[in-house]
Amino acid sequence: MTEHSKTDGLPSIEAPAAPEFQARAKLRNERMSGAKIECNACPVLCQISVGRVGACDRYANHDGVLVRLDPVVLLRRELAQTEPQLVPFVARGEDAAPAPWNGDLVHADQVFVTGVGSSTTYPDYKPAPFIVSSKVDGVDMVTVVTEGIFSYCSFKVKIDTDRYLGAEQANVRMKGEVVGHVTTAEYGSQMLSLGGVHHLTGGSKKEGRVTVEMMQALGNKQAVSLTIDGGAQLVIQAGRAPIVNGVEEQRMRVGCGSAVVGIFARQFHGVADEVLVLDDHITGVLTEHQAGRCLDMRPSGIAVLGRKSTPGRYFQVANPGNGWGGTDIVDPLSIIEGWDPQVVWPGLRLLVTSTTGEHAAWYVLNDQLQAVQQDMPAEVRTIVDRIGENCEPSLCSVMFLGGAGGSLRAGVTENPVLLTRAIKQALVNVTCGGAPAFVWPGGGITVMSDVLRMPDNSFGTVPTPAIIAPIEFSMRLSDYQALGGHMDHVRSLEDVLRHGAWHNEGAPTALKWAAQPKANPWPLGQDPMLG
Image 1 (cartoon, helix red, strand yellow):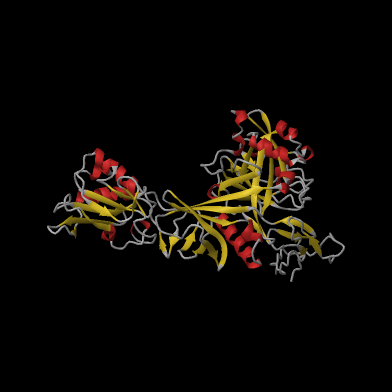
Image 2 (tube, rainbow, N blue to C red; image 1 turned 90 degrees about the vertical axis):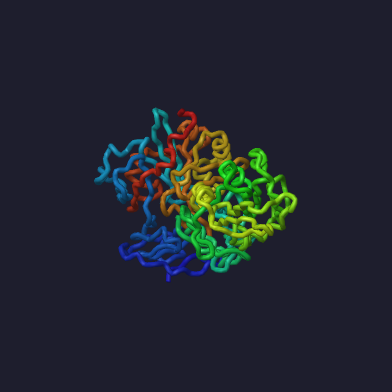
């Protein structure tokens, strides 16, 4: 059993063995056994025996030296290899780097050091592990690279589906613990807010552990199973279709009922006398809608349940559910209150469809003005299929949202507010694992990044609990000096590639080359001052 400092009642954690490490340790703390070292990469302060790893599985006691186990990820603009390549750092004092790299690889416009695997600035006063100088288009640049320990962070999840997931503000649970809530519905999507400091630190220990487990998996593009109070069971994964109540979703709606009526009105004209598009939010009626009026369509006399908004647009026609158009409707005729006998006529052709075209039925009114379902004509089926064609695939999008606080900024400068101001003045480009990050307006440094555009396994955890995420700040060298940067710790890219992090003490570690995703702009090419 590996001992850990008793922080906030954390239980002892059995650390897996690392048999490749040698059985010798340096004494780091007089209170500890000589066979252990203390890791201060996070507030837990694990006491690690030789050949063992800390509670986060990221640091180990290697022959009495604290080392980082996973590699630092470096981005290359053009990578010939299809798979990432592991290369050991050269130990300090050695004269030459081993194959496969040489001087041709060390070009500032091709190599970017990310925060993935870079280590942290904890206990907050240390400069960032990598402060890298380079030259881009003749301009001296510097990139400050670190892993942040984020307590104030969450994931915003956009789920493209017309299916009802749960009421707004309903709790979202994993393994029975509340880990987030349902937020607003957007156009064709349901939104979830998952994680956050209150779930990490404000609830029970189990709630915090389950929350950080969920956040790490979601950020690392893995599937997560969730339940919504009073709503659906979900399996969500970045870049994949959601699974709702055991069924994989297929389509994101093309628009609300009113929008579908308007978009396809000209195509419906002449082949249908009335079109009713069912929707949880805004149900559309073609002949009443302005689109139908502009096409001089004959009024049908239909009376629809719900609250009429504007002509041809109805709210609250049914309750949310898993039926037609995201409602609880099973029989589409149930929302028709009746027909105006002075207006309607026998033989009227009625199409009822959902906003995705997944549900559609064709009716013709008989002499008693009753809607009788019939086979759908081919020309009508073509339009319904076109509605489906215009629906994008149902996907889950996962956005990391984190507040970069004091320790992150202290790793950049001794006067943190100057970094905040420089970012707001667009003098600093902020990235997460090399991926573009949107910086929210207002106070502080609140960044948001798409996890699909970040390197694989960008996120880790510490058992405080908190999330570990990469962040990089790139700027002109002159601007870095002006904001009080740690100039004594600025090193060339070549030196970084040879020796690793400045506080690595020469311990062996590794780097991993990875190709820059084609969708991402190059991190060092976004300085507006460079044109």
